Image (tube, rainbow, N blue to C red; front, side):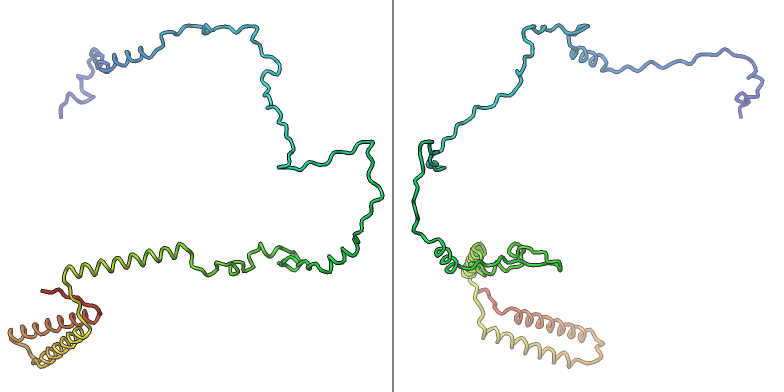
Amino acid sequence: MDPMSLSESIYNLIPCDWKEPQQLPRYSSIFKDDIKNEIQKSKSAMKTMGPANVEKPSPKDFLKKHSKDKTLPPKKSFERTSLNVAKKPPVPRRNEHPVMGLQSEKNFINTNVADIVMGVAKKPKPIYVDNRNGDKHDLESSGLLPKYIKKKDYGVIPEYISKRNQEVKKAQEEYDNYIQECLRKSAMKRVSDEERETVLQGLKKNWEEVHKEFQSLSVFIDSLPKKMHKQRLEEEMKQLEHDIAAIEKHKIIYIANK
């Protein structure tokens, strides 16, 4: 270890002149002048000290009374005509006297009795009570009456559903026609039910024959030819089962004409 670096060295007791550390140069941005020019441009050149010099108002332009009140529109005069309201008879004058001594031949008692006897009895308003205190409520507006089943169009298929069903039916017919046209262009032939049944029975017969041959194999298969023969029979049975399942699944079968 260097003995000069120790704090208890005798060389450290000798006083030495203190030197001020050298300062680094101050940072100055290269955009300082551009920013200063932009600030000078944005400053207003007409700024002055004190209040702004504006034109003083004239003493004659003072606020007058009711000068800011809103004026109502003029009243409209409504005239009664025969279109809206019938004119009432004028008020009789002072010198006009009513006609006296007029008597009606109508028997109001008999007329009222006849009206009551021939009249239809007033039906009570349907109500319902919802508690034991007898609170009554209107039954028609409660939603408890089956109003909808009494409508004329109740149970009738809406027009938009009928229109949609027709569109679906038309689209299905167009699709069927398109399929028939594609089959006709590609010369596809539909297999009849008799041919399909014949092919199905033939496949089942072939599967039985292969299965019988598979059952006839020996129990011990110790040679390579026997293993290959067994593998070939298993593949044939699997293919026949796949073909039988496909034909049984699809009722309609098309074949391409070669």
